[in-house]
Structures are given as structure tokens and as C-alpha cells.
Amino acid sequence: MYEKLAEALDALMGTFYKILKINLTKDSFSIIKNKENETQLKAIPKDNKLSEWFINFANKGFIYEADIDIYKAKTNIEYLRRFFKEKNNSNKKETFRLRYRRKSDTSYEWVTMEIIPAENYSDENQLCILFIQDINDSYIHELETQRQLEHFCNFDTLTGLNNFYSYRQACIKYSQNNITDSIGIIFSDLNGLKIVNDTYGHEAGNEYIRAFSKLLQNIFFQADNYRISGDEFISIFINIDENVFITAEKKLLDKLNEDKIPIASIGWAWEKDPEFIENVAQKAERIMYQSKHNFYKMHPEYKRGVVEESYQKEINAIIQNLSLSYTMLGTINLEDNRYKILKRDEKEKLPLASSYSDFTNLVIEQLLMEDFKCQIKKFCSIENLRESLQNSMATSCDFKLKNGKWIQTTFRKIESIDNLPYKVIFYTEEIDSTKSKKLDNDKSIRDEYQILEGLGKSYTVISLIDIKMRKMLVYKNNGLPADLMKEIDNHDYDIAMEWFTNKYVIEEDRKEFLEETKLDNIIKRLEKEERINIYFRTTKEFHGGKDITFSKFYFYRPLKGSNKIVYAAKNITNSINQYK
Image (tube, helix red, strand yellow):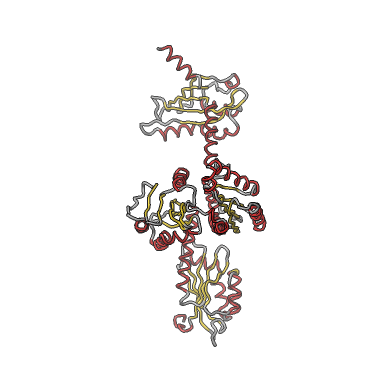
């Protein structure tokens, strides 16, 4: 029995290059086992100083070049001392692990270093055991498995195209990086896939899908092509001239029209510097559905009640591939107002209701911020969904919860009867921080315009000053001269204000007025003051009167940190006592 145990221990020990007993406090070591070659043995310091051995081993070329920096940082003696003091302040003892490549004869192979606190370890006397083990074969296998998993996550296994997950990541990356490139999108939807499946079998349907995928790759080789669902494809062109994009779209359309029955219906959209890729894709999808409608007119035999190949398969595919990113997922029957929750966030206590409409109303009342309730009630209503999904495959909206999180809800049509949406799947997901900031900014802009509308009732001209661009943007003009609008709207603020001063401010007030209204001075004052009123006298032409008039300029920053300043002008001649 003891012989077999000894054999097992010998076999186990055979996988270790090195086993040391180390003392981090004293920076020392003693060798239990060392399987180094003769060259590597020269790295061992004669005074058994652990830190020196680590440094020698790296400096003499025994560590792969790309791993040297992390190796040196992690094996620094001070770092190791801190690691164990911080990690072993409870009953549980932590293990230090480092994976790197070290030289083995003529090649570099993967090893792992583990340092385990000894039984008599203490922060005052840091005794540990160090192991270095060969993991090359198993780790290379692990890397290959990981590479394959990453491939399956990002690519469609049937066609080799990018998949829906990859498309979503591309959209998020574009949004987060604030890329300002033109975007062109071709949205394609196969014609008659269900008929092919029902008539010739699903293998023939797979060939049908693969044939169109090859066509996309051959024609749009410069684009990123995605299969986003069973019969839907998106091709994204980044930083492409509009005319070049239209030529590419026409090339695909001409190729499709060579067949008596085109294999797909397509729609396209191009935008210069769009905020989100999804916005361009939605425009392309709407045009695609117009094309699909025309196709059904010419080929009514291809029109089927079921829009997707299979209702249940669609649900299963979404749950399997995407539900990890969704906070809620469910289905709706638009005919009888029934709903079913398939997946939800366990942290959220969703209300129970007998119908989809009641469920929606309860969720909106309990979870949404007040500003969004009316808008989202209308958007999520069965009436709106029927109308929105009649000529579109999906519709979505963004809103904010009471806890401050931005959420996107998407409704996707999965079954129709007589071209009317019948069954719908819906899913919600939390919006990433970059897009959330943009949405908050959009809301701020809406708030600004509410302020502008309120000012418009009593002021003759209302403008926005863009601080970053230093431009004046006229929002509303209630009777001021046309030449004034021409000179100030969308012009440099300081130049516009200088023109205005020379044209309409009486000479005695010009110097003081020009100094007070300089943009840099206005910005500085608004950092300390909530609003600024500047009073001055204007020529009779400014307000269309017979004599000199008294005017007031009003400056206001709607939100702290906003890059806009509200500017308004008002005739105060009738309240001159206030000016005096």
C-alpha cells in the first residue's frame, strides 16, 4: 500500500519543475525539488535570496519576452508580502497563482506558479510553499477550446457570417467610442424560406440560406455581414461615401433581379455621422418591408400567415442565445391580450395581472419615472403595437426607471395573420453607460426647449448659445427685423453681438454693453449667478418704434454643466422705471 502511495506521489511530483519552501519575510528559500537544466541552475543565487532568483530567471532569458513585465511585477518580493498580508487576514488562506511561459530546452512552454501559505504562516513570519507546474498541453487545449467558444459566440455556424450577438457588440462599440463615420446599411430578408423548408426539407432551406450568404460575401466583401435571425441579414458599411454605397446596393439589387423570383427583399439607408447604428438599421428595415410588400403583390403564393419559420423555435433561440443580457423576456398574444413571462430579473418584483394591458400599466406605475409614464403607456399599448409592427419586424423604445437606470424594450413580431401582427415577443435590457449619458443629454435638451417655449410668450427673440461651437442658434423670433436674424442665426456669437451693438445699441451704451455681453464674461458670471439681466438702450429700428427704446437681454443656463445658454431679448420701454 505504501509503495503504491509513493509511486503516486512520484508521478504527481513529476509534473512540477520546482518546489520550494520560501520565507517572504526573510526573502529566502530552500529547495525541496528542482528539475531545472544545467543552464537554468546558474540562475540560483548562492545566498538563497528569493527575490534575486526571480530577477535572475527573468533577466537571463528564461521567461518569454511578452510575459516578462507581468512576471517581474507579480514576483516582486514586496508585492508578494502585501498580497498575503491582505488576502490572509481571515481563517481562509488564499493561494497566489501566476501563469506564464518559461524556457524548456529550445522552446517556451506554459507553466503555472502557485504559492500556498504554510501551516505555520503568520504575517510576522511569512512561510509558504512555492510550486511551478507544467501546464502546457492542458492550457493550449484550454486556449483552443476558448477560441472555438469565442468563434461560436460571434459567428453563425450555418453561414460563417457574424451573428446577432456580434451585431449588437458592433452597435455598442460604435456608440461607446463616439465614432463619427458615415454608416450605410443593407437590410435583407429572404423570400420564401418557409416554402423551401416545407416543400424540400430543412436541409434544402439551409442551402438556401447559405447560397444567399455567399452572395452577400461576394458582393459586399468590404462590409461587415451579419445573419441576425433565421432569414434576416444586415450588411454594415462604415466610413463609406454615399455614392459608393448606392452603387454597392444597386449591384446587389441587380443581381437579385436576374432571377424571376428574387431570393431576398432588401432595404437600404445611409447617414453621415449617425449617433447609433440601430437608427440607420431601422430605416433600412422599413424600406425592406416596402420591398417585401411589393414582392407579395407580385407573388401572392409566397405570402404565409407565419412570418418566422417557427414561433417556438424563435423563442427558444432568443432565450438560448441572448437572454443572459435581458432583464425581462416574454410573449404577447395581441388577439386576446394574454401574456407570458419567460424570463425576468429575480431582483425585480414584477406585478401579476390577468392581461397584458393590466400588467403593462402596473409595471409603468411601479417602476418608471413620472416623465416617461404617458409616453410608454401609449407605446406599449396593443393598438400601437399592431400599427407599428404591421410594416416592421420590430420596434423599440428607451425609458428611465425610478432607480435611475435606462432601459430599452423591444417588441418583435413572430407571427402574423393576413399581414396583421398576431404574436409578439418582447424583451428589456439595461442600456450601457455611454448611451445612457447621451439619453440623459437628450432629455436635458427637451427640458431646455420647454424653458424656451415658456420664455417665448413674453420675449421677442429666443436663442440658444452653443458654448462649444460659440454659435448663436435662433429658436423663435416674434417680430424682430429680418436682417437681424440673418446676421445672428447660426453665426459666431461674439461677431454677431458686435454687429448687433454697432447696428442697434445707441452709441453711449455700446462700450459697456459689448463688454458685458462677451461670451466668456457671460459664462463666468453664470458659474456664480443663476441668471443674468443686461439693460441697455436701442435705436428705434430694433423694436420697430418711433423713438429710442429700452431693452433687456436675459441669459440663463438651464442645467449645471450644460453646453448651452438660453438667450432672450425683450422690449421694456413700458416698464422704464424698473430700468431707472
